[in-house]
Length: 491
Image (cartoon, rainbow, N blue to C red):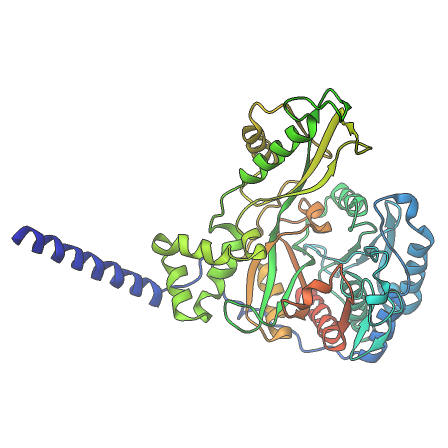
């Protein structure tokens, strides 16, 4: 009994020690790499006309710069219409800046600063929009290309993604130019023509800037936003993407004998082999891990979260599995913590009574920072093993971006202005989709992804979906953000 008592006492002391360590670490917790933005002098708001800005966004939405997978379906004249519209609508901005067209229709603007020793800033917003799903037009409250101003918002495809950013960025520049603002630091605007499909415009712009040896202080593009019902804190939170996932699509092909379906082979043929391969790849996924930009968001907001969340984040040595389980409980949360695998397309026989001579599947990957296309391919090959299939990328993969700094002057400026304009805490995070900004990584070490728009989690479903609209309050906030960011960073 004496031995049992000693063991019980030792266990009790160990438990008390663990609790004590966890409590001390919780009370002393500070987010890793936390920096103060107190030294950033955010300029006051610049006056502008919200009603006029709404009319301008309405007009831009009516210009159908739709990017299709098949280039033959695009309407090139619509891009010309948009360029002419921008020139006519923003005369002060166009008088202050020089304009170049690269690629087919990508715009590169330069507002030259008075101090050439200062690295420029690059602001991005793309011109194209995704198509409206055929047959869904009647589900819209207002026709998708009407640009209707109703119910306190501008409605239509692209009102958020990304003409909402493009027009409000120009509204900010126009307001500054009219007010006589002269930047010390050069300001550049890059507006890609085909972000929603190929990204060739942004690549052409990046090549131009690199050829001129331009090294920007930071690049800012779309990506994340202000979330009004953030589940961690229960309130508002402005999320700025410091990295984005890579993109790759794997084609899995199963060759087979083919023939008549009345005499199938014993092994089931190519479709069966393909199904086994796709299932094996899908079931051999990447484990979730609490690291990188996905974890940085929770680490940053933990001091403002409920005590149990703060304790868990401050003591990942003890609670890491629980954090992963909680974040991974939703598809969007899980996507922040690992490389995702999504089988999306299948091809078999052209007729129901014919065995295919080859069957194919396409699997889309979003590659998390820390992984690469090479590790993805190796994992897929290990998963299929000896199955009679071949694996190949349909296009060269886009690797995940480097992680931008949350201690640089660029971060301080962007986060300080975002916090001031939105009135919300600011945190870094990971963009799980792709943006044009990935092509400008060689132009600036720090690339950030943020739209100064406030959304509830449910609101985000309208982007690329039905009833896309930008509220007038979001429009006001966007113009305010872009004008003040330029004046703060370049003034």
